[in-house]
Image (cartoon, rainbow, N blue to C red; front, side, top):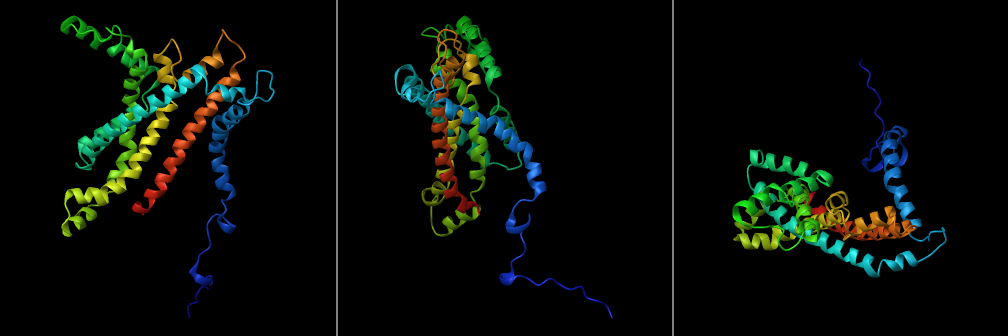
Length: 306
Protein backbone atom coordinates (compact mmCIF):
# COMPACT_ATOMS: atom_id res chain seq x y z
CA UNK A 1 0.00 0.00 0.00
CA UNK A 2 1.39 3.35 -0.97
CA UNK A 3 1.42 6.05 1.63
CA UNK A 4 -0.08 9.42 0.97
CA UNK A 5 1.63 12.49 2.41
CA UNK A 6 -0.67 14.60 4.54
CA UNK A 7 -1.89 17.75 2.91
CA UNK A 8 -1.92 20.93 4.96
CA UNK A 9 -5.41 22.17 5.60
CA UNK A 10 -6.31 25.26 3.67
CA UNK A 11 -7.25 28.37 5.56
CA UNK A 12 -10.84 29.53 5.51
CA UNK A 13 -11.65 31.34 2.29
CA UNK A 14 -8.95 29.49 0.35
CA UNK A 15 -6.22 31.97 1.23
CA UNK A 16 -2.58 30.96 1.16
CA UNK A 17 0.22 32.13 3.45
CA UNK A 18 1.89 35.32 2.29
CA UNK A 19 5.55 35.44 1.44
CA UNK A 20 8.02 37.34 3.55
CA UNK A 21 6.90 36.16 6.98
CA UNK A 22 3.88 36.97 9.09
CA UNK A 23 1.47 39.56 7.75
CA UNK A 24 3.49 39.80 4.53
CA UNK A 25 6.37 41.73 6.12
CA UNK A 26 9.65 41.71 4.14
CA UNK A 27 12.19 39.22 5.35
CA UNK A 28 15.57 40.13 6.81
CA UNK A 29 17.24 39.15 3.52
CA UNK A 30 15.00 41.53 1.60
CA UNK A 31 15.92 44.40 3.92
CA UNK A 32 19.61 43.49 3.59
CA UNK A 33 19.41 43.69 -0.20
CA UNK A 34 17.68 47.08 0.04
CA UNK A 35 20.32 48.58 2.35
CA UNK A 36 22.58 49.96 -0.45
CA UNK A 37 19.61 51.62 -2.14
CA UNK A 38 18.29 53.06 1.12
CA UNK A 39 21.77 54.34 1.99
CA UNK A 40 22.05 56.00 -1.41
CA UNK A 41 18.63 57.64 -1.10
CA UNK A 42 19.34 58.78 2.44
CA UNK A 43 22.73 60.25 1.57
CA UNK A 44 21.92 62.00 -1.70
CA UNK A 45 18.20 62.78 -1.34
CA UNK A 46 16.90 62.77 2.24
CA UNK A 47 19.94 64.35 3.93
CA UNK A 48 20.29 67.26 1.46
CA UNK A 49 16.53 67.87 1.63
CA UNK A 50 16.69 68.08 5.43
CA UNK A 51 19.62 70.51 5.23
CA UNK A 52 17.69 72.69 2.77
CA UNK A 53 14.55 72.57 4.90
CA UNK A 54 16.26 73.68 8.11
CA UNK A 55 18.69 76.08 6.45
CA UNK A 56 15.87 77.95 4.74
CA UNK A 57 14.62 79.08 8.18
CA UNK A 58 18.00 80.19 9.54
CA UNK A 59 20.01 83.37 9.18
CA UNK A 60 23.79 83.58 8.84
CA UNK A 61 24.14 83.14 12.63
CA UNK A 62 21.89 80.06 12.79
CA UNK A 63 18.94 81.86 14.37
CA UNK A 64 15.36 81.26 13.23
CA UNK A 65 14.10 83.67 10.57
CA UNK A 66 11.46 83.97 7.89
CA UNK A 67 13.36 86.59 5.93
CA UNK A 68 14.80 84.03 3.53
CA UNK A 69 11.33 82.90 2.49
CA UNK A 70 9.95 86.42 2.14
CA UNK A 71 12.89 87.23 -0.16
CA UNK A 72 11.58 84.64 -2.61
CA UNK A 73 8.72 86.99 -3.49
CA UNK A 74 10.81 90.09 -4.09
CA UNK A 75 13.27 91.46 -6.62
CA UNK A 76 15.54 89.40 -8.82
CA UNK A 77 14.81 86.21 -6.90
CA UNK A 78 11.12 86.32 -7.74
CA UNK A 79 11.96 87.21 -11.35
CA UNK A 80 14.21 84.16 -11.54
CA UNK A 81 11.33 81.95 -10.39
CA UNK A 82 9.04 83.48 -13.00
CA UNK A 83 11.59 82.96 -15.77
CA UNK A 84 12.27 79.38 -14.63
CA UNK A 85 8.56 78.54 -14.68
CA UNK A 86 8.14 80.18 -18.09
CA UNK A 87 11.15 78.32 -19.49
CA UNK A 88 10.02 75.00 -18.04
CA UNK A 89 6.41 75.41 -19.19
CA UNK A 90 7.40 76.46 -22.73
CA UNK A 91 9.91 73.65 -23.24
CA UNK A 92 7.48 71.16 -21.70
CA UNK A 93 4.71 72.15 -24.13
CA UNK A 94 7.05 72.09 -27.15
CA UNK A 95 8.57 68.78 -26.09
CA UNK A 96 5.17 67.24 -25.36
CA UNK A 97 3.62 68.23 -28.69
CA UNK A 98 6.49 67.26 -30.97
CA UNK A 99 7.36 64.25 -28.84
CA UNK A 100 3.77 62.99 -28.98
CA UNK A 101 3.71 63.36 -32.77
CA UNK A 102 6.97 61.44 -33.08
CA UNK A 103 5.69 58.79 -30.68
CA UNK A 104 2.50 58.40 -32.70
CA UNK A 105 4.52 57.99 -35.90
CA UNK A 106 6.45 55.04 -34.50
CA UNK A 107 3.50 53.56 -32.56
CA UNK A 108 1.37 53.05 -35.68
CA UNK A 109 4.24 51.42 -37.54
CA UNK A 110 5.78 48.00 -37.32
CA UNK A 111 6.44 47.23 -33.63
CA UNK A 112 9.57 45.31 -34.63
CA UNK A 113 10.62 47.68 -37.42
CA UNK A 114 13.92 49.49 -37.74
CA UNK A 115 12.30 52.93 -37.38
CA UNK A 116 10.83 52.17 -33.97
CA UNK A 117 13.99 50.54 -32.66
CA UNK A 118 16.15 53.40 -33.90
CA UNK A 119 13.93 56.14 -32.47
CA UNK A 120 13.51 54.43 -29.10
CA UNK A 121 17.24 53.73 -28.77
CA UNK A 122 18.13 57.25 -29.85
CA UNK A 123 15.60 58.77 -27.46
CA UNK A 124 17.05 56.79 -24.57
CA UNK A 125 20.47 58.27 -25.29
CA UNK A 126 19.43 61.85 -26.15
CA UNK A 127 17.10 62.17 -23.15
CA UNK A 128 20.17 61.79 -20.91
CA UNK A 129 22.44 63.95 -23.07
CA UNK A 130 22.92 67.20 -21.21
CA UNK A 131 25.29 69.32 -19.21
CA UNK A 132 28.64 70.39 -20.66
CA UNK A 133 28.53 68.04 -23.70
CA UNK A 134 25.15 69.39 -24.82
CA UNK A 135 26.19 73.02 -24.29
CA UNK A 136 29.41 72.41 -26.23
CA UNK A 137 27.47 70.75 -29.07
CA UNK A 138 25.29 73.84 -29.50
CA UNK A 139 28.24 76.21 -29.20
CA UNK A 140 30.11 74.27 -31.88
CA UNK A 141 27.02 74.27 -34.11
CA UNK A 142 25.23 77.59 -33.68
CA UNK A 143 27.61 79.53 -31.44
CA UNK A 144 29.33 82.77 -32.46
CA UNK A 145 31.84 80.77 -34.51
CA UNK A 146 29.80 77.59 -34.91
CA UNK A 147 29.73 75.59 -38.11
CA UNK A 148 26.16 76.54 -39.02
CA UNK A 149 26.67 80.18 -38.00
CA UNK A 150 29.78 80.58 -40.16
CA UNK A 151 28.20 78.80 -43.11
CA UNK A 152 25.10 81.01 -43.07
CA UNK A 153 27.14 84.17 -42.56
CA UNK A 154 29.72 83.44 -45.27
CA UNK A 155 27.50 81.82 -47.91
CA UNK A 156 23.96 83.06 -47.36
CA UNK A 157 24.57 86.41 -45.69
CA UNK A 158 22.51 85.57 -42.60
CA UNK A 159 23.93 86.46 -39.20
CA UNK A 160 22.25 84.45 -36.46
CA UNK A 161 23.50 86.88 -33.82
CA UNK A 162 22.75 90.14 -35.58
CA UNK A 163 20.17 91.18 -33.01
CA UNK A 164 21.50 89.77 -29.74
CA UNK A 165 23.38 86.91 -28.13
CA UNK A 166 20.13 84.91 -27.93
CA UNK A 167 21.87 81.55 -27.49
CA UNK A 168 23.09 82.60 -24.04
CA UNK A 169 19.72 83.93 -22.91
CA UNK A 170 16.27 82.39 -22.36
CA UNK A 171 15.61 81.79 -26.10
CA UNK A 172 18.84 79.82 -26.32
CA UNK A 173 18.01 77.83 -23.19
CA UNK A 174 14.59 77.07 -24.68
CA UNK A 175 16.20 75.64 -27.82
CA UNK A 176 18.75 73.62 -25.89
CA UNK A 177 16.25 72.25 -23.36
CA UNK A 178 13.91 71.16 -26.15
CA UNK A 179 16.72 68.96 -27.44
CA UNK A 180 16.32 66.57 -24.49
CA UNK A 181 12.64 67.21 -23.77
CA UNK A 182 11.39 65.65 -27.01
CA UNK A 183 13.26 62.32 -26.55
CA UNK A 184 12.06 62.14 -22.94
CA UNK A 185 8.48 62.56 -24.13
CA UNK A 186 8.93 59.66 -26.54
CA UNK A 187 10.12 57.40 -23.73
CA UNK A 188 7.34 58.21 -21.25
CA UNK A 189 4.43 58.50 -23.72
CA UNK A 190 5.08 55.44 -25.90
CA UNK A 191 3.69 52.94 -23.34
CA UNK A 192 0.41 54.89 -23.26
CA UNK A 193 0.03 54.68 -27.04
CA UNK A 194 0.96 51.00 -27.00
CA UNK A 195 -1.80 50.51 -24.41
CA UNK A 196 -4.53 51.41 -26.92
CA UNK A 197 -6.06 48.04 -27.76
CA UNK A 198 -7.12 47.28 -31.33
CA UNK A 199 -10.35 45.75 -29.98
CA UNK A 200 -11.52 49.20 -28.88
CA UNK A 201 -11.26 50.60 -32.39
CA UNK A 202 -12.92 47.49 -33.82
CA UNK A 203 -15.78 47.80 -31.34
CA UNK A 204 -16.21 51.45 -32.26
CA UNK A 205 -16.34 50.57 -35.99
CA UNK A 206 -18.78 47.70 -35.45
CA UNK A 207 -21.16 50.08 -33.70
CA UNK A 208 -21.03 52.49 -36.62
CA UNK A 209 -18.56 54.92 -35.10
CA UNK A 210 -16.08 57.01 -37.06
CA UNK A 211 -12.47 57.94 -36.33
CA UNK A 212 -13.73 61.14 -34.72
CA UNK A 213 -16.05 59.29 -32.34
CA UNK A 214 -13.26 56.86 -31.47
CA UNK A 215 -10.86 59.63 -30.48
CA UNK A 216 -13.64 61.70 -28.89
CA UNK A 217 -15.02 58.98 -26.65
CA UNK A 218 -12.26 56.34 -26.37
CA UNK A 219 -8.75 57.28 -27.42
CA UNK A 220 -8.81 60.89 -26.28
CA UNK A 221 -10.09 60.30 -22.72
CA UNK A 222 -7.61 57.44 -22.28
CA UNK A 223 -4.56 59.33 -23.57
CA UNK A 224 -5.30 62.70 -21.96
CA UNK A 225 -4.20 61.79 -18.40
CA UNK A 226 -0.88 60.18 -19.48
CA UNK A 227 -0.23 63.10 -21.84
CA UNK A 228 -0.79 65.61 -19.06
CA UNK A 229 1.31 63.48 -16.73
CA UNK A 230 4.16 63.43 -19.25
CA UNK A 231 3.78 67.20 -19.64
CA UNK A 232 4.21 67.66 -15.89
CA UNK A 233 7.23 65.36 -15.91
CA UNK A 234 8.82 67.44 -18.67
CA UNK A 235 8.10 70.59 -16.67
CA UNK A 236 9.81 69.17 -13.57
CA UNK A 237 12.71 67.93 -15.68
CA UNK A 238 13.34 71.38 -17.15
CA UNK A 239 12.69 73.22 -13.89
CA UNK A 240 15.34 71.23 -12.05
CA UNK A 241 17.95 71.19 -14.85
CA UNK A 242 21.20 72.90 -13.89
CA UNK A 243 24.31 71.60 -15.63
CA UNK A 244 23.33 72.61 -19.17
CA UNK A 245 22.37 76.16 -18.18
CA UNK A 246 25.48 76.52 -16.01
CA UNK A 247 27.73 75.49 -18.89
CA UNK A 248 25.95 77.70 -21.43
CA UNK A 249 25.26 80.87 -19.39
CA UNK A 250 28.45 82.18 -17.84
CA UNK A 251 27.21 85.68 -17.00
CA UNK A 252 24.12 86.42 -14.93
CA UNK A 253 21.61 84.12 -13.26
CA UNK A 254 18.37 84.21 -15.25
CA UNK A 255 16.88 81.05 -13.69
CA UNK A 256 16.62 79.68 -10.16
CA UNK A 257 19.32 76.95 -10.32
CA UNK A 258 21.86 79.58 -11.41
CA UNK A 259 20.63 81.91 -8.66
CA UNK A 260 21.30 79.16 -6.12
CA UNK A 261 24.80 78.71 -7.53
CA UNK A 262 25.42 82.43 -7.11
CA UNK A 263 24.29 82.46 -3.47
CA UNK A 264 26.31 79.38 -2.55
CA UNK A 265 29.55 80.32 -4.32
CA UNK A 266 29.33 84.13 -4.44
CA UNK A 267 32.54 85.91 -3.53
CA UNK A 268 31.12 89.46 -3.50
CA UNK A 269 28.36 89.07 -0.90
CA UNK A 270 29.07 86.41 1.72
CA UNK A 271 26.72 84.73 4.19
CA UNK A 272 23.85 84.11 1.77
CA UNK A 273 24.05 80.34 1.77
CA UNK A 274 20.74 80.01 3.61
CA UNK A 275 19.05 82.23 1.05
CA UNK A 276 20.21 79.74 -1.56
CA UNK A 277 18.69 76.98 0.54
CA UNK A 278 15.40 78.89 0.63
CA UNK A 279 15.45 78.96 -3.16
CA UNK A 280 16.11 75.23 -3.12
CA UNK A 281 13.11 74.74 -0.85
CA UNK A 282 10.98 76.74 -3.28
CA UNK A 283 12.12 74.48 -6.11
CA UNK A 284 11.29 71.39 -4.05
CA UNK A 285 7.77 72.72 -3.44
CA UNK A 286 7.16 73.48 -7.13
CA UNK A 287 8.45 70.10 -8.29
CA UNK A 288 6.50 68.30 -5.54
CA UNK A 289 3.27 69.93 -6.68
CA UNK A 290 3.92 68.93 -10.29
CA UNK A 291 4.77 65.35 -9.34
CA UNK A 292 1.79 65.12 -6.98
CA UNK A 293 -0.60 66.04 -9.78
CA UNK A 294 1.21 63.52 -11.99
CA UNK A 295 0.59 60.76 -9.44
CA UNK A 296 -3.11 61.57 -9.37
CA UNK A 297 -3.26 61.38 -13.15
CA UNK A 298 -1.45 58.04 -13.17
CA UNK A 299 -3.95 56.61 -10.67
CA UNK A 300 -6.77 57.66 -12.95
CA UNK A 301 -5.18 55.90 -15.91
CA UNK A 302 -4.25 52.73 -14.01
CA UNK A 303 -7.72 51.20 -14.40
CA UNK A 304 -7.34 51.16 -18.21
CA UNK A 305 -4.16 49.05 -18.14
CA UNK A 306 -5.35 46.33 -15.79
